[in-house]
Image 1: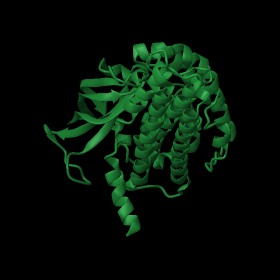
Image 2: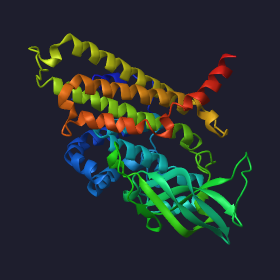
Image 3: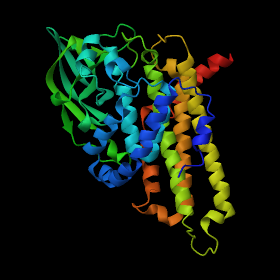
Image 4: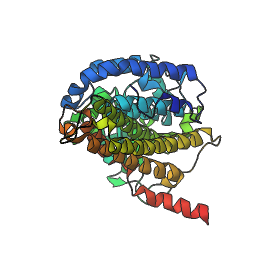
Length: 402
């Protein structure tokens, strides 16, 4: 079944899809994945990663290459379409949606490096699983022809299934940090290397999003060529496609798509539970027939509609802007940061409201509602959704209203 925020509502969106046939095909593939995801859900949770069987199916369906240009084997969906697909995957399972979001964002980063690196990665015309960490967890010491990289980086979602892994370093020369050319502090750059060079440390023992496999990854004195370094997320791409001038904005908004998808799944779970005819203790009327249930369900659905509407308005605004963004820093993304912070908190409220309405049945691990709450709580801890981002947005609001 669908949630109250159903297909008809999505079709009334103002977001225009230039290749609707491709999007419809992707959404159909995602729908067909539902039985497999449901079957593998216990394994995803217990093993703290996506099973190889599922990753192979996702790759075959083009999920990891939705934003990738066709000339490199991708589907080249526009960002609003990719947002809808990521949301649909997160509705099936939070960890699946999260890894799809990370994988699609990460598939773009080689285009911030060089044509040679992209040709190496995509030489077979197939999309790849790329993982990485944006935190500056290591150093890169200058050596002839490149850099020696050492460090450990957290939150590398999907690293166990990745073919390439990226991480951000403080750039060093002679044992001292190199000063950044465009501001105070050291220069940082991100490197990308084949997965076989990396050590994966089993650190992902978490409250939610357990299946994302977001372990630490490490390098120890590994040589990385110059051409494998780039500036992330504000580097300039050599590629002409529109997506490459909007990487930071799309990165944050796809995070919002995961939150909306998980919240839609929570409403779906609640309605399915209520329609079984369940009654709460000391009540003679089925839960689904009570005024309290209907009123609160409508309130939750309205909040979810608002979250999706804001998300779609923001991605449409970013995508339809013909200008190639050149500014660096969080101020460039003030509206997106503001939107994602609010969307994440709204979706947490929706999931927790569903959990409360479901009563004691929701406390069992066999009830997916409790997992939706845990997954959203962890997703909301990500930098993209942090309330402190409102401070950056507040500066932009003051400037706009002055």
